[in-house]
Length: 240
Image (cartoon, rainbow, N blue to C red; front, side, top):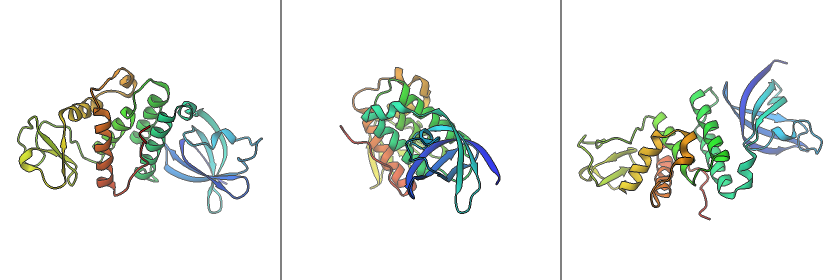
């Protein structure tokens, strides 16, 4: 059987048959790949540590009848710290769910690198709640062609003033004259936070402290925008 080696992240892992797992990988080389990991639910299974959600590693995959088969795996990072902090875990699960909904079965190197950087910052750096997922969503919308952090109204091109609105229908920021029924008020704090998050590197997120409740406000705005842009919702981050 032909074999392929990929760098990949486990984005879904389900029980299959008696001791197998049906695993969805998100790989650098091929995008999403659905595979079987045989016998990995046994206590002494050789590949046991490579089947868990968030696991990042190098996987060797062989063609099989119906499903690809993972025959070897070398774990690079388990992101274990995400399972030890409830806030980080929920945010990590939301990030993975976003990836599941927007990724394809083709190579998307920029998105792959973005996700790994995002999870590294969330797991290892002292980053405040919502910062990582907000930055990721801003990057996702930018890749889709929605560069909504501008100084001009997207409709009439007038210079934006202190009062701004986010038009969910078009996914852009508009002035009061161009707001519609699908527009929601965008506070100056939220707009400023979106701009800062779009420009800062993941490695520097731990040094950032946004004012007031702007991070949460950004999150709820971006969550709504994701639903409008994709037609689906990702796992919410509980308020705890």
